[in-house]
Image: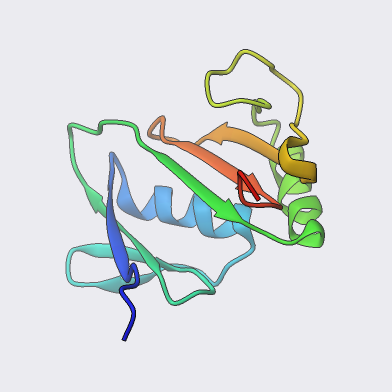
Length: 124
């Protein structure tokens, strides 16, 4: 079997709020509970397992989506009035990027994690 990412743990100030935030924006099923985790299951059999942690160190999470999913997710970002950027350094507010012939956008979750959706892998 090839090596595959199965899950990663995501630190959060409120695991349930953070997991619901991500699942709702990405249009995924509501989070489930597994032990101390609030679990968001992605469509490629990878899960993000949120856990309460008073010392969150923001990380970056990028999601490859279809063009239609991009439109749907971006619509939810805008409907919530969330700030968004074309770049991870927040130098291009209110814009999306068109890197590698696709589209991409960045926004923050309630913990300061940088979330990204892209329609084409970088370098593709």
